[in-house]
Amino acid sequence: MDLVPLTIRTLRSAMTREEAGRKLAPSGANKLVRRLLSGPFVGLSDVYIPYRLYKVTAQDRNRQSIRWVAVDAVAGMLDPYEFPQSVLPDRFVEIKTRNFLPERLPEEQNREAVLRSSRRLLFSGGFFRLSEPAITAEFLGPLFYVPYWAGFYGSDPNIKVVMLDAVRRTVEGAKAGELLKNWLMQGSG
Image 1 (cartoon, rainbow, N blue to C red):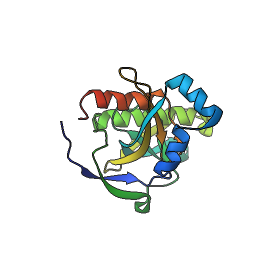
Image 2: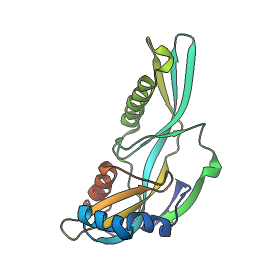
Image 3: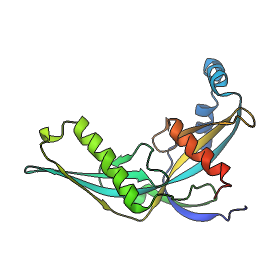
Image 4: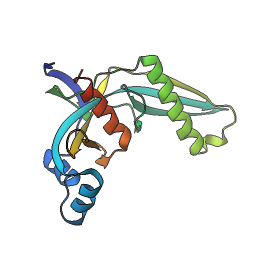
């Protein structure tokens, strides 16, 4: 299936293709380690994963905390994004691309994922010595995308994918690579 490029709204990338290439296809000793773990580096591609943004309010006794949290709209399993305030329009750019995963989760399931991750964050931080917090999540729409760089390693049929978050500049865990591999195996659509 040949996908038509569409214009999407994405967070501004903090990495160029060259920077991503240096991180995903390192030289020297790092190259040897990566090659042993994943096989030879065979390619690099930009990929965009959809996210939904929520205003999460946690209330306990007379205290209130407000956070802006975004969760991926494919499976709700990637690390959430937390913003210090509602996402500002200057953080976004519009691009034309074919390399974006479709949203798969209904909004209600996304809301549950953001509530679960918010509970974990709040309880791990000792939020106001919680007694009976009320946590709500308000969808702030519209959908937006987060840019990633995908490094491909090995050879068919054992291709491995390492994903690099192009905003945080961090290598992601295996879940992100699995999302991409599943999408590619489904015919990119």
